[in-house]
Length: 75
Image 1: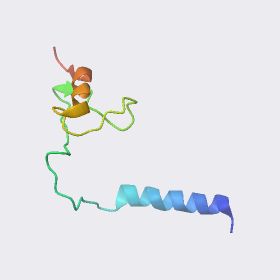
Image 2: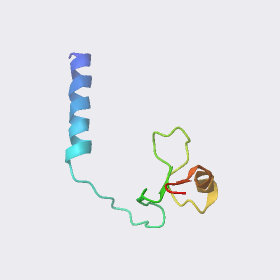
Image 3: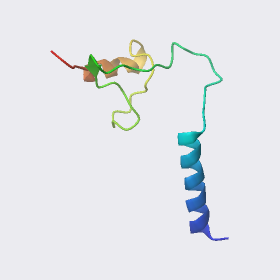
């Protein structure tokens, strides 16, 4: 087995799965997950912002730290 070829194939399969396969959560916790509209406020936590703040409820626990990074779009 060619290890490099396997990595390439699994990477391609994962990219296809993550971009093209419909997915939905089977766990119902609306108070733990959210989407944001950044037309008024920006700076919400994301996985690639380097802050390591969980994108959960920003009014509880460590989520409060995210409030210090929000910026008003039109001050």
